[in-house]
Amino acid sequence: MLPSTVMARMAQPPRPRALPFLTATLSLLAAFAACSSSGARSHLPARAAGSAAATAPATRPVAPAPAAQPATIFPVMLGIDVLEHEGYAAVKGKRIGLLTHAAGVDRRGVSTVDVLRRAPGVRLVALFAPEHGLYGVEEAGRNFADTIDRRTGLPVYSLYGRTRKPTRQMLRGLDALVIDLQDIGVRSYTYASALRYAMEACFENNVEVIVLDRPNPLGGLKVDGPPMDPDLVSYVGAFRVPYVHGLTIGELARIAASVPGMLAVPEAVRLKGRLTIVSMRGWRRSMRWPDTGLPFIPTSPYVQDFSSVVGYAMTGLGCEIGGFTWGVGRSYPFRGISYKGRTAEQLEQALRALHLPGLNSMRVAAPAAAGNAVTGVYIEVTDWDAWRPAELSFHLMRLACQWNATNPFAAAPPDKVSMFRKLVGSNAWWNAIRRDGARVDVAGFLADWRSRDLVYQQQTRRYWLYPE
Image 1 (cartoon, rainbow, N blue to C red):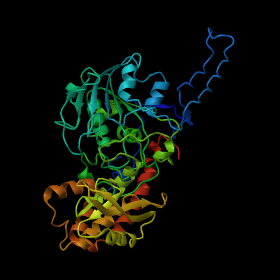
Image 2 (image 1 turned 120 degrees about the vertical axis):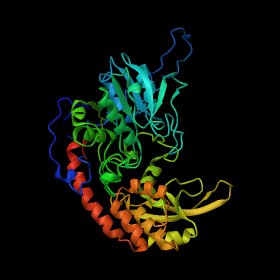
Image 3 (image 1 turned 90 degrees about the horizontal axis):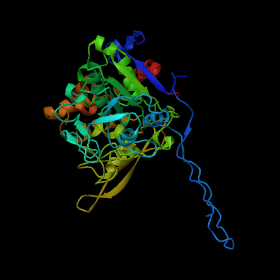
Image 4 (image 1 turned 180 degrees about the vertical axis):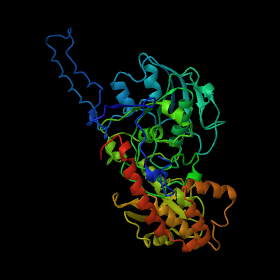
């Protein structure tokens, strides 16, 4: 059993082991144990029982003291909770920066910014913000500038503005950069990209990286969708993993630091890089977010809850090109879908005819911006174990070709094509859908990806920090 704080000292790394699958033409990674303690109780003290006042008249009956309230039980301690429990040992005596966002909170809902500002012997001197900003209100894809945080007075360096990667100037004077980002387990969600770029910058500038680990909301066993072709790696797919990758952000960091070629830095720089992972306690790979006992803090404007995380994995790719849109009016982000020119009833019939395992669909209505009701189809997961998250999107693409007079993928403008290819990550799929349209062999691609995903999952087991 590893200690709760996993130290990956790259100056004396374990010798990288050759991973043929990771380097082969059909590899799922560029080169892309069990560490968990049992569930822990909160360290919030129980409310003290009341006592009779010393000056109360002897003739006045003393009200019974209120019963002591039991401490809240949290099945999972987050990395930030473990850091606090261990006396901030990993950061004590250091000048640190913090890369985080609104979902970076401890199990009680207190911002990691505030936890570290109060930590004894720790100097938090700078904040770094990923896509959507420090408070999670910036729109997807919209750049924002450096600023001063009004609440704390600390500088906030934007990693989604003039640069995606921390500069030498931003890191100057830091002993360590702490990273506390809540990822959602889907490759195109850019917090994993922010992690990778930050690790590269820190390794290049001799700054320690400290990752406070968090749950993968989809659990650690769901792996699905196309692997990433090497020429399509980008900020919307910074790791060569399947679309739904089944890793925590700490495990992604561990792989990036351990396997040659994962980071865009010289090998000598990687070997000298310093990574500390503060692991969770109580989390298991079989846990979905509701099993953690933790409230879900919105990670971006349209990922407000666990339901939208599930939807993002299912419909995000399928709504990029072709005419499908996610959401019904202003409701059901990523879980509701609609198609212009098709009624909700027609769409529901088409989806049910697919007989996709673990899924059902139902018609729903919701208010639109103008106040009138609009209809669409809500995608329900009826069997979690049978559900294959990315499958639906590729059937939506084929349906879009079937319902359009001309192949929308062949007619798409260059900017949309470029983004679509980066998001999906498969040149073979792009060539096939553009060439074959509604005749594309969806089942064949899905079967091929599933077999490759299984190999990926077996090869990444050695980097798991948590049991099943």
